[in-house]
Amino acid sequence: MRVVVSGASGLIGTALRTRLSASGHEVVQLVRRPPTHASEVRWDPQAGHLDVDALGDVDAAVNLSGVGVGDKRWDADYRDLILTSRTESTSTLATALAAMPRPPSVLVQASASGYYGERGDEIVDEASAPGDEFLAGVCVAWEAAAQPARDAGIRVTSARTGLVMTTGGGAFGPLLPLIRLNLGGPLGNGSAWWSWITLEDEVAAIEWLLTADHVDGPVNLVSPEPARNGDLVRAVAAALGRKALLPAPAFALRAALGEFAEEVLASRRINPSTLVSGGFSFAHGDVETAAHWLADQVRSSR
Image 1: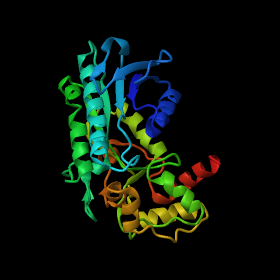
Image 2 (image 1 turned 135 degrees about the vertical axis):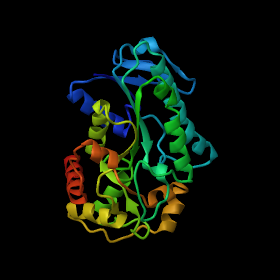
Image 3 (image 1 turned 135 degrees about the horizontal axis):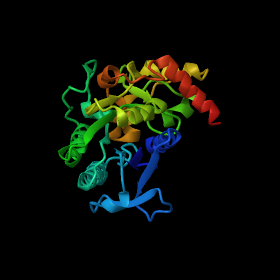
């Protein structure tokens, strides 16, 4: 397949490009700078510009664009950028795909588990209502911005990704060095449910969605085994031969992270019902397997 990918230089995008190329797919990257080789196409999502002719024939598309929600403290300007960087890129890509003489068969549209907001011990799946927090509203608008592709008959899946287990960033990137120094521990009181997925399973699931013709609409990209954050941190620490004894109090996280701390502390117990019923096979479906995989990644990156 010829797959166009936006956000291809990010954490997930970089891993996805590697996986798709290894599977024999041709990857076309959307870039905001002048292209440096034939596999790149320039676009300007803020201006709503993407040259359909420059894309050529495309079989599938993956949209991963959007600024990192944890990259900066959330003042009014950054809150606006969190929203618009997602909706503008999605609308621009969806509109361009819909205008193609031969539209691609599928658009895998990024979204996030933040769609569900704070849920406590409640088990949620793709049919559950969104939360009422800021990021939940962002996710609702983000998914809705792909409507031009749906209207053109393109199969659209909204990939609601949970906490990605990786050494390179996300929630685990800053935590791992502390665990290795025996300074890591539960966040808050450790009882919040974390719905997580390893980076390997994340990109495998996105690749699977490209050809899973029976799947459309929202899809939870999380493992089948959510865990309380204290248990998950302890499992990772044990896999690294360390102890997770020092909790990070909620007030300290709020002081350090501002509003983003509420996202880190949120409890979401999410069921990946569409992946499971659709036949996707997880490489790391349980906490212990995932923790040892992550520990192996840490060791190999030294």
